[in-house]
Length: 317
Image (cartoon, rainbow, N blue to C red; front, side, top):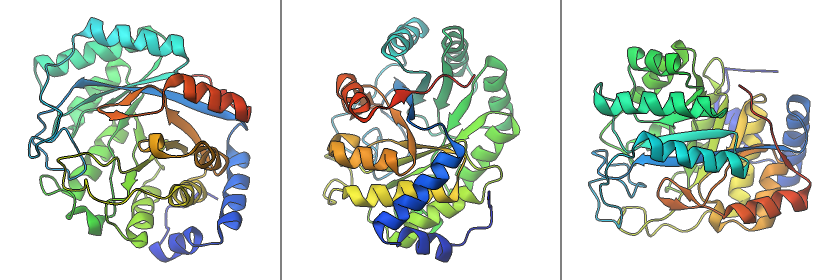
């Protein structure tokens, strides 16, 4: 049953089930709604790195923090399309372009993004962007260019959000998701665990996503990547079982969504990653970097999938 009326108490009750029972239930729901043994491979490229005016406490690209990531020029269209070709040849079916912007501003930079989207679609790839806040008109321009999906994470619960970000509101994020949906672009939205939040904050984020109608087509579950110079650099690593519980709970609450095992995989054991895939994750970011943070090498991921008998899923567009 597809529901949009979840409560935090209901989500917490699922999350806190004995681990094997939780995973068994999630696996049954996954098999009822998705092809068995398929994993979507997505590649994420930073097309404009660093210098972001936002103060997201986890982000090395924020201009508020002294990290090793400086502000770089925006990539040219041909550079992005060459990276997209390499991703396609390596097996990716979705190519996502990220820019360290607070919001999209009309002008030459956005015009260049539009060209990138058209070029990625011409290569036969699904095109995704994550560019910050977006107006209705900008979302429509992206749709007209062929954009398949827009990523805009909620990051955490409504209550914990103010401890992580002060330069935009939770409502700003929800408004962007509404603009994306209204334009007919599919929604990619999830969050990050390991930022000092409570378990209720974690499931509260899932409740926010599950209350969207329809559910996001893609739900990335990220573990904090601790980066020197950011306010969260000294937090402890996220246990693998915490990610497994979040993946399984997301699968139960949003049965038809793709659940993407995202940032933080480089610190996960092979067994923990496979457990997440068994529990309902059916998408991963594929490539050596996620914007500016490390990710398992492509050869490692190919070996992981082969050992488990998993195959890349075909494009959906």
